[in-house]
Length: 552
Image 1 (cartoon, rainbow, N blue to C red):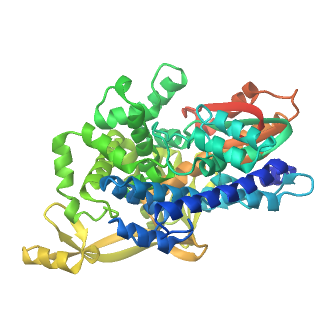
Image 2 (tube, rainbow, N blue to C red; image 1 turned 135 degrees about the vertical axis):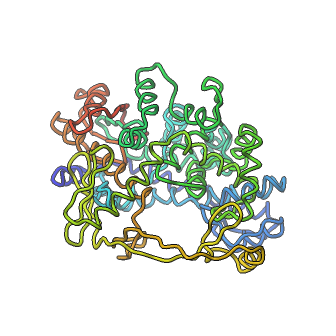
Image 3 (cartoon, rainbow, N blue to C red; image 1 turned 30 degrees about the vertical axis):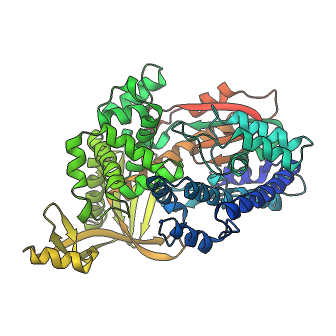
């Protein structure tokens, strides 16, 4: 596989440099426009979108107090603007978000990385993504390209490319794109902010262009399928099979139906999007924080989403969870309304997926038992996966036979101070002094509890060698993503054996460059649907496309 990866990197991906140059000009033009608009909207307090402190100071004058404008906090800030009925604050925040996009900077990066033959090389690092063995993106970071919805956005992206190719001035292109408006959100709402920069972010994929033909294909919700297959979530496997056969609804509608007991045929587009966020955020033991991250990834309006959940959830459940907000340890800064809505979504998803939830504890116990009993394999997921401690390494064998390795694995025993709040046990160290004093004055006492867990050493997000915790949700994520990668590796071998010429892989997607008369979408789709022997019972679906520009 490493040799195949080298051939993929040596082939390179062709780049449309003239259009890249035009896009770079338009990015700078649009950012200047955004800065002018910000200056006007804030009465001169903010002159540049990059002026973080100026934006924070201006927001304070509108009653929105914050110390950060990070991507992860933007939805909360926008919800505050909605609560305050302040459309100007919302417009400033949206302008800041679109003008500060790092994605549009990829045009300049793409130009600097393109060689004299018009191709960019070395975009992939084999086995570069931690324990999972997935490919890591390098240089232009193809794994982080903004996704394009081929049903509702591909046509506008194609139009953008034509505008850049034709002899149009920056003013003309800008006016046309602003008239078109920003892309719609996945739930049907219109994005806000500057349309030109939003569409330019969507257009980066199309800068990869070939005079030959691209054949692209990607697996459909492969991680959700692998997770359900391993855990034995029977209803979900049957739902995938029905959807693939054209006889059942898509999983995101079904997820909302399972969580809120709304008939599938009555699930609206915004409600389907809630189901999608549930599926993507909760499968790896994710809670309120993971749900919030996913709403930010898909630029969903948190206030509207919370309102939709409030209107659907039973009043008794809403009141019960809302009452826990004051002492909850997982609020992530959310007020009672938003916290209650997100917590209900997470809770209901877990109730609808009991086997996946149970698998987290089973995985945690398996790792503990394996470390405590060296050289003795501990099976999980019905024997498809097993752990074994050998020397200082904990190995996890995947269904394909490949292994994940956790160096210097050991059992750590820690004593933590817990206190009962009247509704739940919490870590006393996480409480504010006033909160702890109040509980102690009410007669609650601090209790020491022993907690055991597996720890190992690995690279953290900052590439430092640190001690890390192994727990059920993390193990589930590692195994599911690694098994999905094994499936992709199998497909790559099959595609190369069939004469296809892969030039790029992005997550669960393959991009081939072929002569126009060679190959077709049906051939690639059939190759991607070939199930390896180890994956019997796993429902696999893949879709393929063809064109001269990378537009997925």
